[in-house]
Length: 407
Image (tube, rainbow, N blue to C red):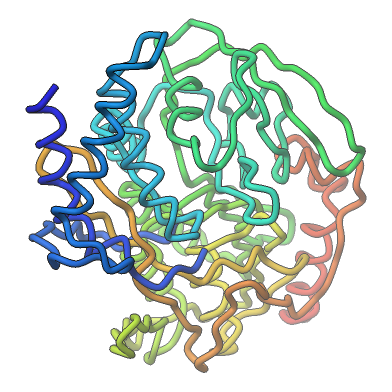
């Protein structure tokens, strides 16, 4: 017991500096992970670490001597870590235990086992919010939609402050089943889904050529493999002399900052892609070179287009190299860094806001498209199964490009 408690206290002082930071709100991630050093001896409450140590030991002694049930110290400590970080008040600043952090790293590489959803926490009700199901995943096939809220997993009620536990329950061995209870705001319905876990191998880019020799590329999210996949698709289309390009970022929840910067660099003219600003006012700029797209470009967006998707969309709109079509984007203008801890767990901390090239912060607001076109509610949840003719946003994008090229 003593060793475990002392281990926690050693970590606590090292975490103090990270978690007592300004808080904001699906993670746009810097590619770099930052090793953690020892933090200050005094945390924001004014309590020194000795006082905190004594209080924790006192609480443990009370429970150990009086609690009628079984007390799992390891689980209690993990819950305490998560709760401490949760106190930052930011759904994107979270603690990840060893297993969660390992799975997180696998997911950013493009492969993991689970049901296949990108989630966040709705700050208004502390519920787990689905940003988007991954294309072709068990969650997608089961009918989970962007905007759904996961309220129970295997019968246990889940909230934002135990999101890691919810994630762990949804993960598991391929071929096993998990019961998920969904609340859907659009029709105020609650229903249960039994979903079979599978290996999620995320092919993040797909492309084809539409009528009138217009190219189409869909990016489902921005992970480590996405740039190579996008470059191959883009170059293939350009080699076929397409006359315009539609880039579909609808329901794309975001991903890695360096990856979206590389892709955006291929499209926009020389200048600023985006810049970030941290709590101290320090700015870091990402720049594009002179290479840019030379044919009409339309980017499709909606309320599920978040984070890294908004970096690309904002740069395209600000530079005028293309136009946005659809509905207002999610409005997530924050950057997170990963801080690994000595026991192979980690803390993900919101460390900066990002801005469009013209200096606009879209956090909480989203980006309004140049062409506002709503999908009918009965079609909005089935974008990937629609024919081109049924997809009114896609058809309007084709029409705009044809007008630009004189068809």
